[in-house]
Amino acid sequence: MFLLSNKRINYLLLTLLILILQINFPSIIFFDNYKINLNLILVYFTFLALINGSYKLILYAFLYGLIQDMVITIDQLGLLSFITSLTVFLLLSIRNYDTLWSLKMKYSSIFLIYLFHFLFYYFILYNDFFIIIFLISFFQAFFSFAIFFLMATFFIKINNNV
Amino acid sequence: MDFFRKFNFNKNISSLILTSFLSIIIFFSNESSSSEKIKGFVIDIYSVLSKPKVLYQDILSIKVENEFLSKKNVQLSLLNSKLINYQIENKRLRDMLEFKNESFKHLSLLPAKVVNSNLSPSIESVIINVGSKDGIINNLSVIDYNGYLVGKIIDVGKKNSKVQLISDNNYSVSIKVGENISIGQFKPTYGNLGVLEGIIKTSSISTDDIVYTSGISAIYPSDISVAKIINNNKNKNKLFQDVAVKILTNVNHLYYVFVIQ
View (cartoon, each protein chain N blue to C red):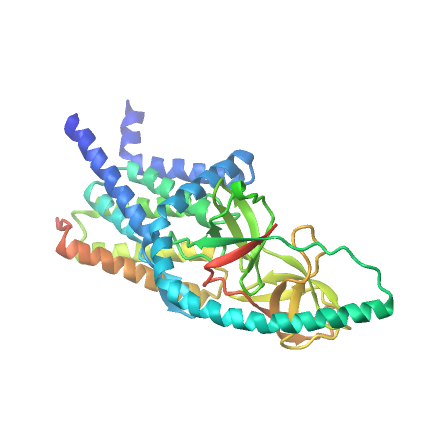
């Protein structure tokens, strides 16, 4: 029981640390004033989904999305929370294919989920041409995936059960 | 028992359905007073968490800002002397025309720092570090240091507020433009572009004309610069002109703004 609560406290502290890092991390100017930022929280959720795989992650993702909704959006309160929980649901679904998919297949799925997430995300946040939204989403997904890939390669090994 | 086994098996799907349902409820209770209070509270907490970023941005930008402000100071001094001359000239002309003295209310400006929203880069809103403690209420207009319209206050926390930016696609403002002061409506379209609606064909407007707030609405004082005309067409089949404009303020580089009280 003591160990369990210790683990929870560690998770809570780590989440808070990543949230503070996410908020305070500088944005990268992409082109013509368009900015992208490294989505550390999404990468963190990906690791938790692949390692832990608890359904509770969907609820935590919902809460994080709700915070984003309240800070960023104007009239679309609830949309970012929906997208974030949907994205985490999709990430959790990868575990269903743990013994079927190779590591490459899992990585491809993660990248596509990221791309889907950011496309949906920027359609809500930006009122711009589709090509611009697509480019921003693509590079945002690419950078987020790059962080995930580096972390997965050097620090937290993802199981390849095939 | 079977139900519970199925429920356990589909925990992920159940959680997704639950969160989707909650999202829909939240989506439709956007305007409720409790939601406004929670938003204000979250904005206050967010700005506390983002203090390190504000601090290092201040340190990084202080030299550039100082140079810019020095230049601006010189420009404003020159402009001020010019305006003093204009004032004298204006007074003389008014006296000549026997104008009655009008009571002119000076606008009160409250400076505020933008707490950059790094949860995601957004062109919908920014958070500023003044709130209800500073006398901020909803629907106050916000301008940048050039005097260009930035947006209006939509959510107020104790120490922080959220500003709906001029580039948000739900935004619109009543404007005036041209020599014969045509009244219309500004609406943003893509990026930093927008359109003017309701500009009649007879009004003489041209490229590079500045669009100002009309002062008709209760929210915005008149004569705040909003946008610059980049293109206008008179279509025979339409009642009004098609006017494309470029937003003057740079919504992606807002560091300091002023709230008009």
